[in-house]
Length: 289
Ligand code: SIN
Image (tube, rainbow, N blue to C red; front, side, top):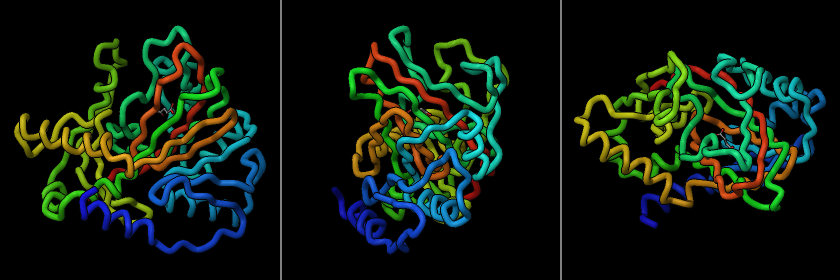
């Protein structure tokens, strides 16, 4: 690992965190992810529990709640504690609830959602602040179907100061049609220009905001330059294991991730077995440099 990367990791890993009084928090790695315990999401949360869950989310970027038994309404109610839910046209989704994205794979599947590194919904003018996926069924084979999550603050900090400064002057186009390449795409997919480096609206920390799932090109560069630069940034996420944690799902696990500073990748390594989950997405704000 190079010295820049080591320094960035050292700094993040050494951040002092106040203890938790109302929930338990066990970090998955020093960089990203935490398992949260001592809370039943089907019941109303106390103010103290909510405040600590929010802090754990901002500190760890991905929080995992196991053994939760939630109705769709309880899942949505937990999501609404953090903001309004994103609704999609029913004709574009699997299922009939505009606020619920069904994530389903089985022996008939020819692709699964999220099978590349991406951040949900970055082609929107105001991309989502976070997603909550509640997995009810995991592969019967007893293993597989994990999700990887990468910390994009650290991805930025692993680059040289010169590269960080250069990226800070650029904007990129995020195109909602990219995931639909080769398939019949819905009409009116969004396409938006965002800064390549943005500030997290809650923590003020800078983060790298391009992803291979939606980012088509960098506006200020030639086509060839843009492709080389984006490939370098996409490869960083794919090739640096230290950026990411791996969540192993068990039935009735809910994971809440921060779309403003993470990318994720669903691993489809369990075909022809089935996996089933439901996701709500919480609306966010327009990213700012
Ligand atoms: C997604 O939201 O991209 C799907 C993640 C997963 O299935 O683990």
